[in-house]
Amino acid sequence: MGDRGTSNHSEVTDFILVGFRVLPELHILLFLLFLLVYAMILLGNVGMMVIIMTDPQLNTPMYFFLGNLSFVDLFYSSVIAPKTMINFWSESKSISFAGCVTQLFLFALFIVTEGFLLAVMAYDRFIAICNPLLYTVQMSTRLCVQLVAGSYFCGCISSVLVTSMTFTLSFCASRAIDHFYCDYRPLQRISCSDLYIPNVVSFFLCSIIILPTIIVIIVSYIYIVSTVLKIRSTEGRQKAFSTCSSHLGVVSVLYGAITFMYVIPDRFPELSKVASLCYTLLTPMLNPLIYSLRNKDVKEALRRILGKKLFLFNSVLTENRSK
Image (cartoon, rainbow, N blue to C red; front, side, top):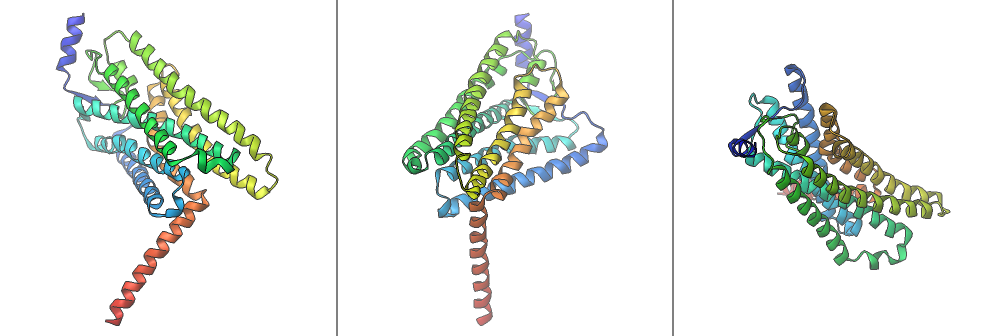
């Protein structure tokens, strides 16, 4: 059996991404929906990064973390969305073995990094609200860089472990992955290897990734809420809650979907696809909208940038007319 599994594994050169089990007539509608959402992801996250990098008043730890969050959102959605849209028009719906490995590696890298970044952002808000006088001292540039680098490092280590563990399995059952991208649970379904050790390792990884980050977020917000309730000013209280509620909304959507996808037993493939949409497309689309529309600093920075562009445009027009 071991020889058979090995030979079948070596013969696998590509996989088929089954995608969404809907009528062919709906593929065009789904393509247009994915295209619209992906365009919003590109516009929102690139716009957010440009605003943060070009406006000196946003040169703070909070926006440094937010810029990295936009970068992560942009890239892990780009790992998934373009291939999914291509498959709506493709008859074969195939992805090469190397392409599948790359997609899983990059997706795992960025999604784990996002989880740690959200925990870092919760800690940042905790310091800003609970210890405002020590904020600039405690959240130094060096510490901010170390926290972001640590998030990427944890994402990279987790990704290497998940990817190597997944693609050492033998795929002799089928080449058809019942999902719209390469993920380790759908790949396990088509494996004929013993899944006991991979399941133990994946559960262990989920535990050391999800639990610590959730604990940091929950503890941070317990202290934040207790501090905010002591604020006498209604305006100050509303501003603090506005900043924190947007962050909690993102965390709830992301962790709720991930928990359903990776912690709860894998019995509902179609529901897993819907849950996957929440963190592959919905969260990257909502993040820039939430943090810009509910953030006075970002809106003012956008007005300043647009004002400068409009001023330069008018200056060029005036100069051309005078000539």
